Length: 270
Image 1 (cartoon, rainbow, N blue to C red):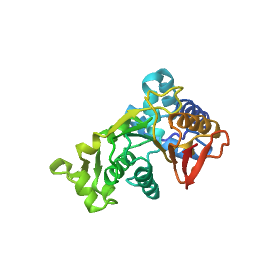
Image 2: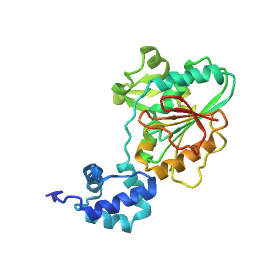
Image 3: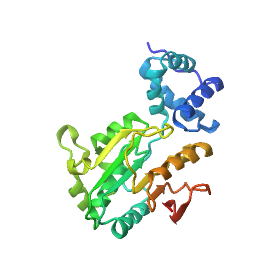
Image 4: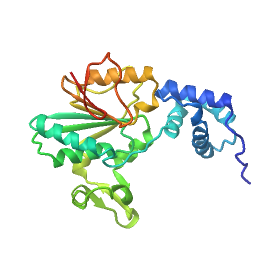
């Protein structure tokens, strides 16, 4: 007979968890997130056969190096979709065609989640009047969503926001055991390198500069100090004239970084 999960997440255990999450990922969990943390930890505890939050905290202390990845995976929020915040992709296409159409370019999708943003960027490049070569690096701190992104397999409902012509060109319809799914075609997948990256790391294992960086709906989970550090790193990875796309609810307010406002949550390095 299963032992019921009846214990609430105590203030002490919540503070312990959120301090670790902040230290490891930069994500700031307010008191309002306590119920969310409780429910997400519960799923992990069931996997481990642990029945009390205090017991999980002790388990984490004793197995920190092995368990921290699982903790971050279950806490991070991974809401995304194809062509989310669609106006950004119209701006991206305009930049590509007007400024970068004859260059070889690099684009970074930071906080790529399950990959829809990176694949959307690649589709825009294929659909644009673009004559150069391109590479897309897509990174995330959550190893589970990165695996989904690498697989490039999505429920049919997730791709139905795309025009039929794009679906036929860039996706395969699943059959038999994959019925109800669509898979990204290999020629699109091959343009993207998905890899683990923690935006809090002192240095990133990324080579060269990026003409365009997307980091949307990630900064809202950071406090101002972490935001400033991450924005400085993005600034350093952009060449002069490079573009940074943030989420619709995000903005650059620091005067220390000379970004030029281009459009809603789109900035250019001066």
